[in-house]
Length: 116
Image 1 (cartoon, rainbow, N blue to C red):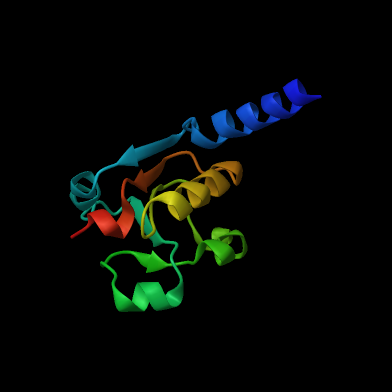
Image 2: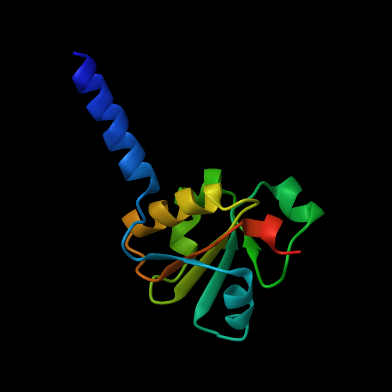
């Protein structure tokens, strides 16, 4: 019984930290280099209050809790760059987008915490 529990915990950890195919972690500078590309969508998945306190154009605020309801507003043919405060929520959002059929997804490493 103990081995089963250990295997389940190990499987969860591996699944949680192994990168998902189709999701690429990029730096702040790589993100800034994409700003002039019209084929890229920029999504900030933080709360509206976090976004209001500190955000960077051209990011559009769609909180991760609302993302599944707003996914139809995004173009699956375009690249999508996702950011949050630290990179954790945006990683979760990127996986959600991948499951919804998006192919070119970028997660900003370190999130807004790495921005300044």
